[in-house]
Length: 79
Image (cartoon, rainbow, N blue to C red; front, side):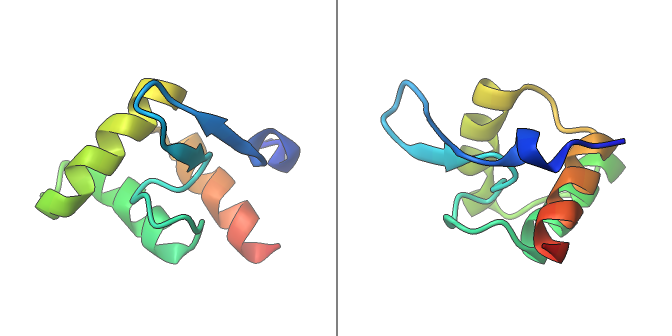
């Protein structure tokens, strides 16, 4: 069972950007766009070029994107 409290907070990565866990696209919000992006990554579907830098920063901080990532994002979105 995912722990929603483990998905809260911001973390600073080496490039100086604040990245919230679950914010895969780097728009400073955790929303359905992040869940869709995570599903695209898991399915091997192409993503927008703009998302590549955000995904790289995100995975450098939190590790690989998994189905657990999708569930955590959906838990956050659901409130």
